Length: 74
Ligand SMILES: [Zn+2]
Ligand SMILES: [Zn+2]
Image (cartoon, rainbow, N blue to C red; front, side, top):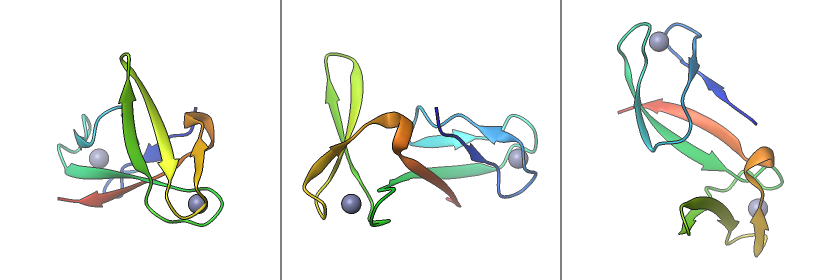
């Protein structure tokens, strides 16, 4: 599973939710899912409790293991 590190302290952040608070430095960040192919923001689709990601630019479904996450301060 891909992950993203806290821009403030470098600790791994939980990418399962859209907004996270770093457990280490208490910084608050917004998690953005990016397409690994074109780097466009992905649309988050929720189905049956699972989360899928769809790239409107590539017109394809991106499996979570390939998603590139980025964290930006709120
Ligand atoms: Zn942190
Ligand atoms: Zn794409």
